[in-house]
Length: 260
Image (cartoon, rainbow, N blue to C red; front, side, top):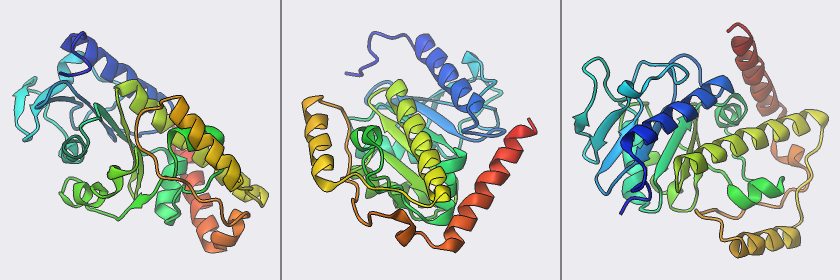
C-alpha cells in the first residue's frame, strides 16, 4: 500500500506544485529544468511535465504514468519529461523510495562539473541525512545512460551528483526528498566557501561513529554511505584547476540568477 493512501491525487499534485515553486525560487533550477515525481502505488507515479518552469505549474499539468512509462492520464497540452526514466529506475531499485527530486543547484552541480564528490565528513547534519554523496558517471539526458549510471549508486545512497548535469535526491515522501536537496546544496555551498578560505577541517572518525550511532537511534529513514575523514585538509585533495572550475561555474550561475 502507498504511504500516500490517505492523500487524494489532487493534494499530491498541489504538493508537487509547492515543491516545484520552492526549487525554482531558490535557484535550484532555471527555465524549464528539473523533474519531480511521487510514487502513488505499486505501479503508478505522478510526474511534472516537460517544457514547463517548475515555478509556474498548475495541477492540470501533472501527469499520471505507470512504471512502464505509459501515460494513464494527462492534459492534451502536456507530456512527461523523457528524464522520467531516471525516476522510474529509482522506484524499481528501491521499494522504500516514494518521491524523487532532480534539480541543478549551482553549488553541488559545480562540484559535479569539477568531478569532486561531496564525500567528506564536514557537517553533522549532512552526515546524518546524506552521508557520502558520490558522482554518477556522465550520461546523455533523456536516454537510459543516466538510469544505468545511477543504478549501483542508489543502492547505498539517497543523494547523487550527476556528472556535468545536476543532482538527484530520493525520499520516503516528497518533503523528505526535497529537504535532502536543500541539505545537499547548503552543504556544497559551505564546502565551496571553506575551500576559498583555504581550509576544510574534517570531523574526526570517532565523532563520525557517534553520529552514525545517533542516526540509528533516531531511526532516520533511507540509506547512506559513510563519509571519509581523510585528508584532514581538503585542499590536499582538490587541485587549483578544480577550484578554478568550481569558482567560474558558481560565478556564472549566480550572474544568471541575478539577471532574472
